[in-house]
Length: 318
Length: 291
Image: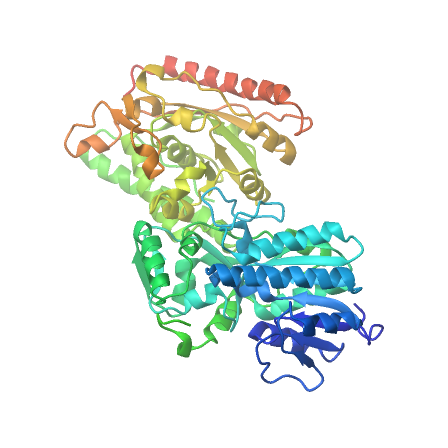
């Protein structure tokens, strides 16, 4: 993307009102007109950024696309959707995304970037240490981001003229409300007795860099993206200064199921597998094709998680 | 670089203590040499912890030397750089893998760390899966093997798989069919294969039968019923058999790694034949399983 050449090409960011969305908006709005689409209020919005406070499937959003001028769409709703266990929320996310694809198909959008998640591969005992983009998507069925990822890939082949990119990042380290960050801010942090999988992090700023790099590259396809290095989960908990509580895995799933029902903790029981088996991504593709290199160290990524603050710690509903 | 491992024999009780002390010093120096080399490469992506590896290797080295009295030949056949070690497998638990790993660590100059690949179901087991990762053992997928080879590691693999390790005593030293995945891997990475023959592992747990009922509920393989399992306390230990390991001459297979199974199976059978010859030669040398 050469910003000056496409001054009038509007970038629409879906899910812009969250922490990561705001980060992306701040990096983009000085070089390009940006429209934020989010049904949540957008606090501290830059003055030159328009905000459409509506759902993706509402007529207001359709009108926005219908008027034309939207050149690029960035969908970042997928990065924090692991917590969706409720059937209604699940179908809501899928319906919204399907409608977004319809807008891209009909209203001359040239570029679509979908932020998926590295968790789409699923945590399984037979996983390779690093999963390439060709690995099957075996995340549990309830996870909306897996379906969104598959829909985006279908769109990639259906519309070869649109530059469609799917990024699958490792666990995002920052002040975001992803399932993994929320898990790390429980106090004490539950771990599975006798298991200690390796985990990967990507600093939120590195991910913004990767998104911008991917858009500029003119390439289409699916890319994993990860930060610098990986470490055992227990070491991560230790670096965060947290205490871990060891839970036998045979008790963890039923306990989580009941806590979910009683609304004590909003994690799907299948998330337990991610604390048991390794699920890390191989980002050799984006490094080779786009020249991506993470700029922040592993320690900086861990520090970024700590920024979420002690105010969010505890076992209550987030 | 550490000197070749101390191998003085001992005859008097005082010699045993002195011998063990010297062995400890030599083994520690070798493990330290390997650890410092690995530490310079940065954190291991497979989760290996050098401190845990060092402690485990020191403890296992005493079993290697004084319990199983491991005898190793052919270490000069192991080429430098990435290499695939292909061995016969037996003994219910992978003591043979530990012995081969220690043979590379304690008997080669310079000492090398060999990374083993294990079956996928192992990662279901609590504690064991965690400990395996910490001592450098990885899940046996082609992607993991390629990544390790790209790091310049020596990889140990057992093409007989679970069928090999679960053999009972009546099938001792009868090799099970070899998979051909290791041939494809070696061809695709253009690395040599070293056939490794191991004698002793078949008798460490002389297994008469396997208990199969209900094991699937625990996602576990059939449980072995071995001859000395009824002996109080000592029944869980393997018998103090003498291990003999022979590294045969390295071989390179040229060709297309995506060739037909028939071609791959021919190469796999060739490796198997070499291992079988090694086993026959080692069996001729020994008086019985213990000496």
